[in-house]
Image 1 (cartoon, rainbow, N blue to C red):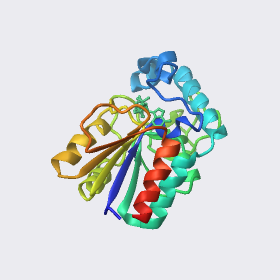
Image 2 (image 1 turned 180 degrees about the vertical axis):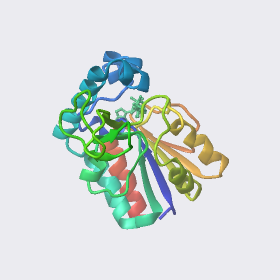
Image 3 (image 1 turned 90 degrees about the horizontal axis):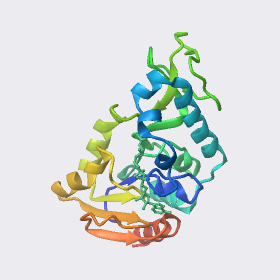
Length: 229
Ligand code: OAD
């Protein structure tokens, strides 16, 4: 065992489950503008469009299934409990459905609804509509429980503490373009923590180790090494 591990995942983890990444040629941000669907200003301007975008994401997630990479990460966590932290930028629940627990969803979760007025959270219905009332306070302020551009990612204090306590930082299936997650590699290296990238196309960033290939193959191989090594 290599000690404490923090795995930061991105859209590449769920790509082989059929969920689109953001920045590929046919990715989500090719068909939508971030400013139209993923900012608080967009939601204020056109809540119906924003709800429709996340309703589509929720429908895609509902039919997707965890792939061997999600399941391998869950095995790693089950075998090593508190010394493995799973942090994800993904808003799907495929890690949980693969068997993982206590996943830090730093960009929120598409299956959760949030009241913009009182902060209450509840399970999102399949289809959310603009002006949907909050079940706690009644305000017509239901929104997807997603961290939009310009908002503060969730769980940052706990993620920072987990990163500082790690011996290995793994960036898995993420382009490393969106902060603060994009700064974790450098932060880890400044703390003397070993870093590894797992990606279909290595980013060229300065990781201590790079494993290139599809997550569904590379992650189970790496997890087997850790568990048997
Ligand atoms: P991106 O779409 O930016 O990057 C996906 C990464 O996954 C790329 O580096 C691909 O090379 C890699 N990849 C694709 N298929 C893969 C596979 N089968 N196995 C391994 N790697 C693969 O997605 P993220 O980095 O997750 O934020 O994007 C970060 C954030 O930007 C998202 O959380 C979202 C987006 O805007 C918000 O919406 C707030």
